[in-house]
Length: 364
Ligand code: HBI
Image (cartoon, rainbow, N blue to C red; front, side, top):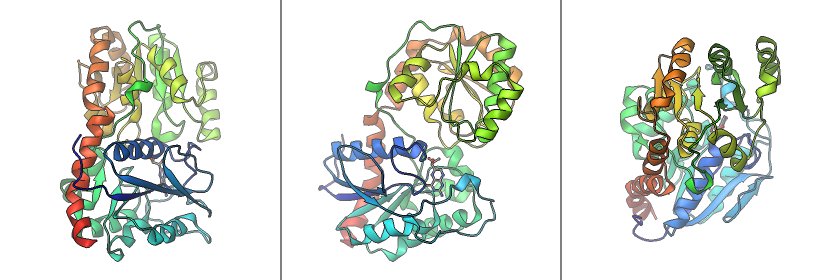
């Protein structure tokens, strides 16, 4: 495990859209928990600043009260910057300013922390969690990259490319990782297909239900109903869907029900920044059948850990189900261990911090 020159005091600033543990922060909640554990393993002192009501065991946690930030996906691309009166985001950064840290890592997908970067005399780093969604975010991100590109990291090249070639070349691509001890390898699947994700339009659940209908395999649906009206639409189109719905599950329950699936269907209708569900499936030995779009297209090895088909090609996914027997489930688990272990991810994080630490030492 590569260690930084000397222990740093690192403050990690969470997403302002929800308390840690509420599920509102989506993939950032998993990423933040993993970031804290790899930094602590590397001997750093870590403090987390997050909205009131947050839960994150084993780390100094400063909870900040305030109005939650509207989520970026629901805003119009050309929307102006919004900071509600009493917003938790600016209060979190007032708390950050008062802390004695060497280096800050921001995980919010928001304008303010990016804008504040040059106003601090200590390095503020950013781990960007989604692709390009908002003009004001693109603009302020380009400003940070113009002066200090080493401050910015993302999860996949496809995600970075949504911000344009220049930014994609400048930022650090970190991938992601997960605690493999929480995922059990399952060698003997049941004749069911799996789908995991927030049940919202950008995730493409209807396509997976169409594949289930075409192949005759039931579809095990796992994830949060983020948009109830949308779920009702799906139930009308696919009367069997409610029967397949397993709910929003804990990691332990998720990996148990996902692990026994024949394959995971990944049907993004947007450029998915990474695709934590791909890591989770492979960790259980489950081959992944996905549209060749966004992060999943970089994670799935065609013919080795799954199959990739053109975006929107439902018939192609159905045909890939027939080929899934060619994929070795043990190889899927092995690839997860090689590429997505916390150790592997931690080394990539340490390299990113070292690239910024010299600045931290210099600025301190
Ligand atoms: N929206 N404004 C805003 N800020 C965030 O940090 C944010 C978000 N939407 C979703 C989100 N973070 C996370 O769920 C991402 O991991 C997707």
